[in-house]
Picture 1 (cartoon, one colour):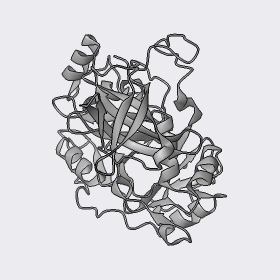
Picture 2 (tube, one colour; picture 1 turned 45 degrees about the horizontal axis):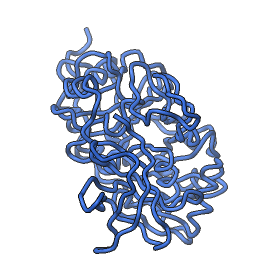
Picture 3 (cartoon, rainbow, N blue to C red; picture 1 turned 135 degrees about the vertical axis):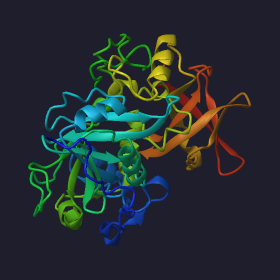
Length: 382
């Protein structure tokens, strides 16, 4: 007879990922903030971004956390906890899900890949330990084991098919049977989802629930590849070029792609960031925070909205994360991710009040008392 509870898990005790060995390469400039521990760039961020966009470079994401979920009940158990429909997840089918608070606010964003025996999950830096501890506390009479394997596994990012070899170097048990690759579903709507994008695409057409051809996210087919941490340097340097998080974030911002910890705060709901598109199944069974998701979706108007800001580049400065955005002297929102794109120039994602007009030009605070002009490209249109 199978056991009624899972074996004890290794949770909450894993140390933060070690400093990336790629920071010791010539020209490496360390990133700060949420991306501390990896390289911001290697001396030429614009060229790195172009190479990354062309599929000719990789970016070190080894600061991301990695969880390994095993046991025959793993998918039905994760299905009951998250916003995504996971019961019938096929092997090597990547997806993403959110964990919400009881009030429906985003707490964790999970990148999931099932390989037939293990469900692999990667999360934002520093969140693997707390998430593993919380998941472990939710194991009630289920055959599931949760492991924080951040110390053993690392993530490398790339665009398209990329340049990484199709086999993990020198695998050791317990290793996946095939390379674990998470392909970002963004911006293709998942079954049971809803779109909160601006009402018309670039040709003036309204996108249907499964049709959003004008979305800039289609230009960023993102992948995350798991490699053994001891082989991180060898795997990354086998690519023609390394890119830093400067390049990766510039492409993400241009793709309107939200990120937990950047675009989110303690009261963010998925609708505000158009995250129902790829991470929320509106018809699945009960999960924590579902009442809020359903209520806001039925009402049709989230309290805040994500927008892309095109910033005045004449001052050669970027706002910081959290910089105030104003309209006619009134505070209407905050910058979430600033970026300098090789083609679009200075841009930023920002979360604004749902009442802020879509066409209005805004001012963004920089360097204390300075201000720069910003034009909106609406993303979420309630």
